[in-house]
Image (cartoon, rainbow, N blue to C red; front, side):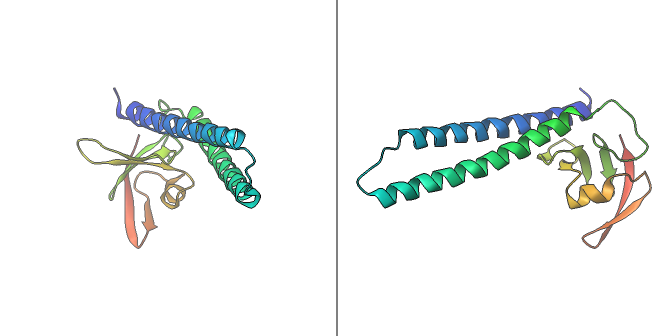
Length: 149
């Protein structure tokens, strides 16, 4: 299987697992909220409910973020060839290799790890639109783009 397909599937799996985990946490909070009964310690009960509500809101925001990641992934074509770095590009640089898609962490290969990054990351913003031979400056390092697939 071509490396870009593996990278795409790695990102897809990351998004699916994160989505499942968030949904499970939301379900657990819903169960806690619905099963919690009014106790004689009213203030303690209200504080507990408020904490659960805050946690549910936080998980709701995380759910929106992961759904955006899924949409971004669905728009990526790993078969198209581009002369400049776009979403779906596998970029080899003098420093590291990157797959521009979603922030899913490190994909381990036999040669060198490939970092799955989003276009919103600092390095992603620098690389987007660049071509082979271009040099970007990141954290004081000069990084040359050597290959785009």
